[in-house]
Image 1 (cartoon, rainbow, N blue to C red):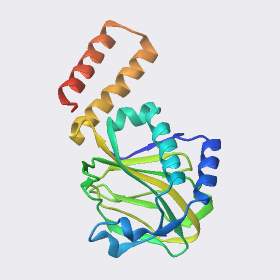
Image 2 (cartoon, rainbow, N blue to C red; image 1 turned 180 degrees about the vertical axis):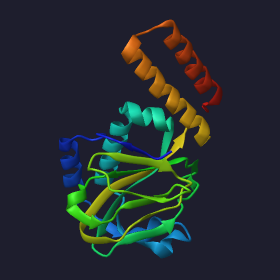
Image 3 (cartoon, rainbow, N blue to C red; image 1 turned 135 degrees about the vertical axis):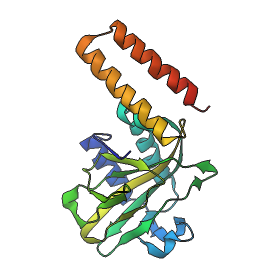
Image 4 (cartoon, rainbow, N blue to C red; image 1 turned 45 degrees about the horizontal axis):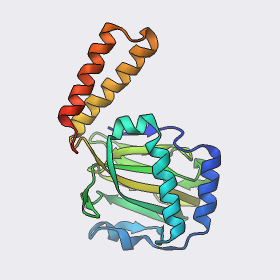
Amino acid sequence: MILVIGDVLDAGEVAALRDAAARLEFGDGRATAGRYARDVKANLQALPSKGREAVFEKVRRALMRHEVFLSAARPKRFARLLVSRYRSGMEYGLHVDDPIMNGHRTDLSFTLPLSDPGDYQGGGLCIDDGIEERVIRPNAGDAVLYPTSALHRVAPVTGGERLVVVGWITSRVRDAARREVLWDLDVATREIHAAQGKTAAFDRLFKARSNLCRMWAED
């Protein structure tokens, strides 16, 4: 499941994180790529610092307060985060992300741009969903959530600058099909409750959703 989650960060938060990122030191992005991905990776990434960790913490808090993210990802932990910068001529060719990062399984990836689509040309996030390649250029403050198992790339930036926070999540529900079932049930229960209130049918549906989550979730 590929999902664009709107308004993870508001305009003020985006501006603050852009300012914070401007004060970070960046190095060659290939340093964090896997064995095969580094050959197709050409970008810059923020080097370790207290300022970078502060950016990460703000992003983690924003995601963990967002109902849609919590429902779709069922996050157990953030396995890794990076701040990536793409300038004209930079790209990240077709690759699949590492299955294990910092000793943790990676189930879901996210890209959260701090640049608006009008700030740069090209640079779309291109995800192969098995049928076609989807090209996504989200607004600043929105997040794209997608399976870490998917082949994907960042198209060449032809002008301007693309600044993003990217991350990888270990989900409490390992199986993607089960996560989608729980997501569908969350959507259905919210809509039924909004339209009809806490009816007997709602209670039965919410019970089924809760018990499936209990069966499938990992500690």
